Length: 168
Image (tube, rainbow, N blue to C red; front, side, top):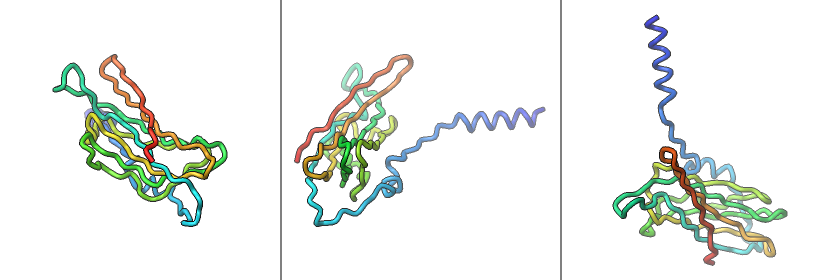
């Protein structure tokens, strides 16, 4: 009986262990979407800025609350594939935290892919942001980059969104 109890206890203990999976950081996941773009392709170049918050101030300037950031990279064309060239994450001070990919990946018509900033990842701080570089066929709509930030503390939930702005 004691042996049975010990086995159940170990199983319960292991199942309660928190596993942090950061798949959007793993470069192998982005490599699966990589593609080569011929230099002679006449694609329009663009660059977009997206604000994101991995932390916000709560009660005072000395107290912050961590947030999960869900970044959507969306192809708004229902006919054309678009190409994302680079996704770089910056902290509050404008220093690069990480580059998710710096080679072309594709998004099929109306396809969306995501980057997740884990609630425990506070490297971006209260004023983090992304720069996305992309190419699209002429006369095709621009991609949209959006972020949804969420947090749940007890019975209180918090969420808000941001949208990208084309800067080039």
